[in-house]
Length: 312
Ligand code: CP
Ligand code: NVA
View (cartoon, rainbow, N blue to C red):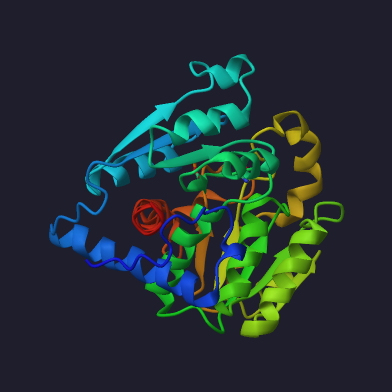
């Protein structure tokens, strides 16, 4: 397919940084690349280009989607483990960014502190892609919005209920929903609400699209009238030590059959994965007919290809 160069050279750090039209274009390219791949039409848009991938946290989906995606686009991806590269021995993000920029055409980084992605982007002369931080997970939500679009025929006017921790995925869903005009309600236990600054920025974006954003503490209220029910682990990577303590507070926030029955008939169930089955989601729901969790996983591949093809 022909790719416009209007996003060339841009970093991909949050959906919040892109206009409504730009987000729509990324989704359109993702869905188109998916179609081409299914038909066996080659699309070597990034032939000869290289993506450096720094993972400071574990990953299955994100790593495989970027690596396979880059291969399908005709380029090459390098997995850079902190155990092997000099960041692990204290080389700064700034110096790493300056060095990598001289050799690769794009840098993907998954890390803890969001500031590190911003620092990487500050010094990089090639696009930097945020592969998840403690604050945000934008490549996830592009794939998720593609998935919702495929199952519901659009995004505007839909209602998404996120049940659980006000975490990186919840934050990015607020940004994503706000940009495309999809209502997002976050239901979380008191003390686990999304970041206030993220909510404020998303609310500003929502004024332009009419999306309604809410944070409440009642999962039953959240799923009423919902077209999409979304959940994620109660303890994210880096919070392993808090898992037991959190579990007690989140017991009422499990996505199970009873909660699903309280949503719109035909509501779809989403989870970014990996899941703790039997905790935030039951087997019955995750393996049930309304679950689209593995479509979501697959769509990471097509979403990442769109992000790379457009920015690199
Ligand atoms: N959803 C997601 O980002 O999965 P990984 O941690 O396996 O990459
Ligand atoms: N909130 C989860 C998402 C994993 C893809 C985490 O940060 O661990």
